[in-house]
Image (cartoon, rainbow, N blue to C red; front, side, top):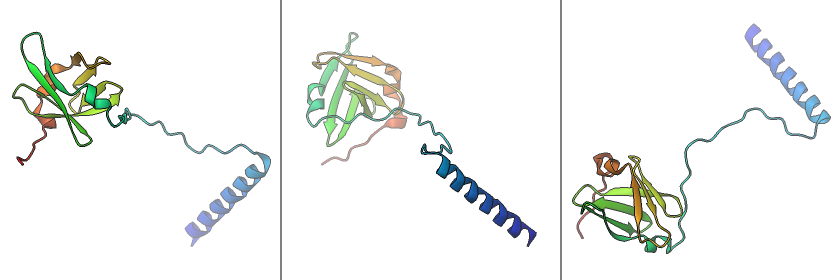
Length: 130
């Protein structure tokens, strides 16, 4: 019974403090600040990816195919696993493993950072044969 009385007394004090504070101020009371981390996904315009899809040849002769299937984007280097890519900003895509593709505005070239991460099977996508 003592706990219930104490809780009721604390609740009443908080309510009266809030009411008094609200009467004195027009500014909202900040209870907590939340910092959002992570990078948001970029929403591509309907035909924006068309410039980038195709086959890219690297200096050492390896090729990478980049394509779109519905609203998802994929990259595959030679016969390695298919990797789903996520748009980060105009012309910039990233895999779950951390590989980064940065396309020239006209789609003529692509810079790949963390190239080895495009070969990581943890982000492998499998397609059913039609």
